[in-house]
Image 1: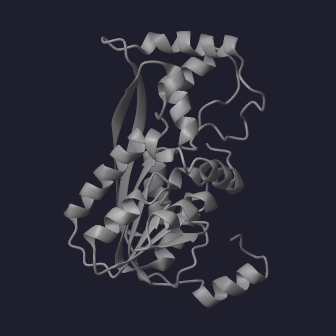
Image 2: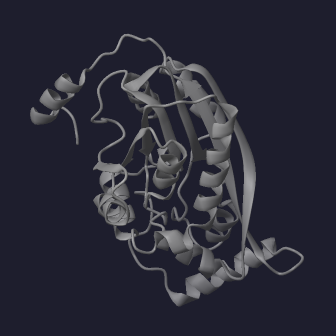
Length: 283
């Protein structure tokens, strides 16, 4: 289970805003496959939220696909939001925590979220909040990561020391259970492995840093890893080399979707603002 703070997530991804797109090979693949799944649904959304929008690649694609819709990109990282605003004025971009979204109850037709919810520990609470803002029968469509993600890197580091070097992620079945507990309608989850190949393990680690997804677990070592240890990790990783000599980086890509329910909404936007002012909620 992740032991990650929202402040660490925001800081890490803010710092990665300028380097993210060049290194986000897997993230782009995942987003494109998620975007293709929009074809499965008959949608005419008036209001769309791209949750965890990052550099806004898919926020802009959503805006181009649904030209009559109001599209808002939301990210916890202020650096990402500022980057998006510089790139496009066709969408609105907001810095906010997914656990306390600044939207009214029953106000959103589509929530699209590519590789964002894995950074949140309280999935039942998250899905409850998403259900709050979704209109009844509004669509939630997302990707996240499963526990087999970066298993080769995790195993290689384990040969070197006992520290936590790779973030842990939640099993697909727990994601589905969290959607059910939040009273979302007809939740569906499925998963597939996606393998990205590298010449060296160091290239993978550099990409993870450049997208802000390097290890930010509280159980990590606070010291820098020296050349000797890095060389040992590289050597350990070679055991996974494919026939062509490339090193595989496996991601367990989880897809999910569900629909908003007519649950009794607990917090209105006005109440949210009041709670925020009183310090009962984090922004």
